[in-house]
Image (tube, rainbow, N blue to C red; front, side):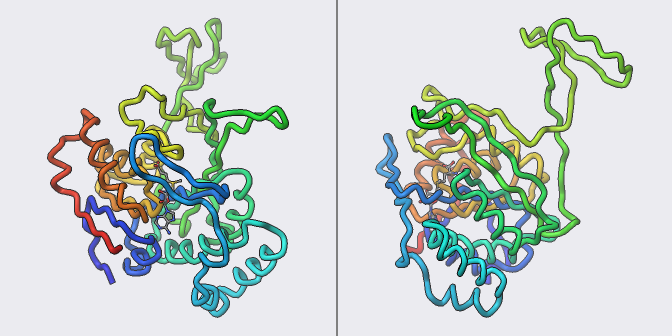
Length: 310
Ligand SMILES: C[S@@+](CC[C@H](N)C(=O)[O-])C[C@H]1O[C@@H](n2cnc3c(N)ncnc32)[C@H](O)[C@@H]1O
């Protein structure tokens, strides 16, 4: 069992093998952005890096299903039903055993954000309700963006869902404020509402508690941090999550790290981090993102611990 978590660790491994060795109640914040069962292969432009997003019975370890049957009968019953109604059944089974372990390693005061999208969100939410408890569901965040293609046969799909759960009532939450614009000629009749003006064409604004829909652009093609990795998430998105659900020096885990966005956002906000990915390219990508990020010293690269179990 891993009793102490070493800050700035990159594991190259199946995340299950690492998470099952992390001690109970040791992580403050988990963000996971697993593949969405898109039935295709993802590839990067700039790195020889990609991952397969297709799931079959071969991805399922029978011992995991036996474990769920014995220890989580309600979840087992759900998986049995999903087995009949959805093509996502193997994908959901694969995630379930990992989410069980994530619940175990999360501190009582911790939070978990699972990044999903509309085709699988409803299945994952029921799984989360069973593993974390319906009462520990905190928010569904709708992340809106503009980029990407569109089909003539449906409304343009321009949002992802991010489910936020806690482990107990005792979870940490920092209610950060955001600007709410009211137009140029707005005057509030309420003397308790303070209006600000930043000379933006959007007019005057007040500061309000952050809403559960976030309008954050995808990483621009011109961004210095963009690696050409199709599922790379914006650093701003991760910063908002980390600021809302952790304090300085808290431990942040990303078990599906991809290009390491969580590591970079955690470093920028002085959080401890460990990330896991099956790919052996994650470390190189994190290093090159640090080199391009003026707010992170290059000395940090020397402080990263790399453990490759392949
Ligand atoms: C959607 S991407 C994550 C993108 C990431 N949030 C970012 O901003 O770059 C999913 C990642 O999960 C990794 N992955 C899939 N199954 C895994 C597993 N069992 N253990 C570790 N990594 C896994 C893939 O290699 C891929 O890099």
